Image 1: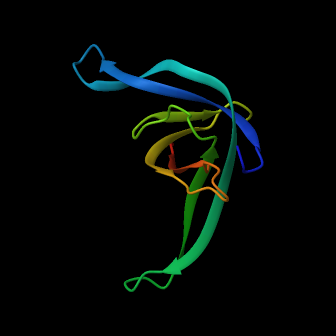
Image 2: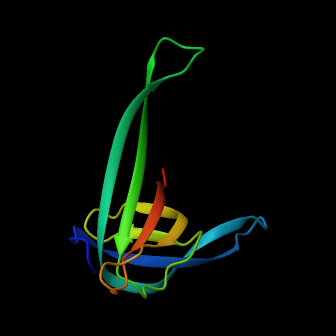
Length: 110
């Protein structure tokens, strides 16, 4: 991994049905102890229909190339136990012929 790891993560995958027939996320771990860089960015914006500022939080992760992570997987920060949903997976270009990291656009699960 080219980025500096800030934590380790587990990748959770799969869905099932609950007793009412509704889809629920399964806690099936497909990989764990993966070094990752997780970053939070906050920006303030104003909506045209309100005078109150609105804080917008975004989360980005980076993992090493070849990590098996897919759209709609869940990523669990093993240090804080925070869970994120993977909204996008982008293979970054590398420098001087090296393969770059995988960038993850994440959304925190409430």
